Image 1 (cartoon, rainbow, N blue to C red):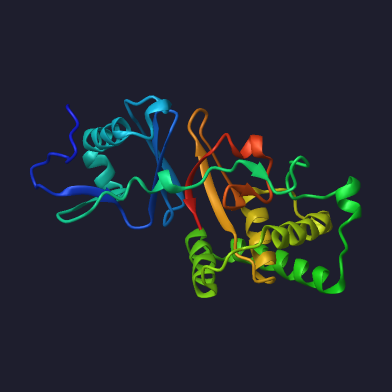
Image 2 (image 1 turned 45 degrees about the horizontal axis):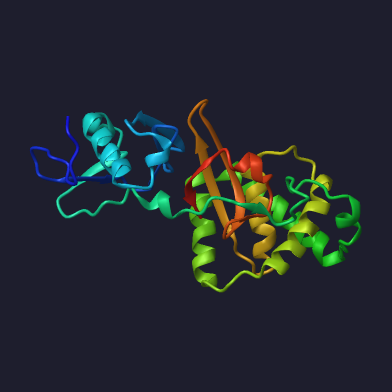
Length: 248
């Protein structure tokens, strides 16, 4: 069917994303994240990656929504709204990471060595904050649904306000976290490591973004911590394989 700026349907209502549903386009696929059910879904789109920033992308999204209208409505990924404004384009405003905060020492925040590690001084307060943050992250992920975890992080960040996060402060405190990370007995897992770093930095009154990303072929989901377009805890090349779908 032909796509237009407004989706044609018998009710005349416009399709918008459901509550707590996030969306992005990557590799010719429209990917949905339903945060309440902690589930990802996908629909094929007739679009090339190069066109994702222009009207052809929007038209392809609308057409894909229309083709799969009933399935998406039944899954509560979309809903009809007579006065709704398009809310499926929010992913376009999410910044892709460009560089690691320790570039060229471009690695995950799990241990730190060389000259960079030698310059990191760790005090008693750092150790206490690290273990408290690590334990809190572990407990949150063990006892709470990811929906509640995300909203807790979002609420705390909103209360803290939109003050600028100083990159030098973020670099220094992330280096401390990175140096201490091997001492917490838990293997690397992006969800845990992202949240633990978020919790540690929050204890230092720093509130960077917790970014969730996806890739389509093969499907994969990942998350990392980011300030602007600067990565704090992941290799730039690896994070660059994922398209941001949600930023907390």
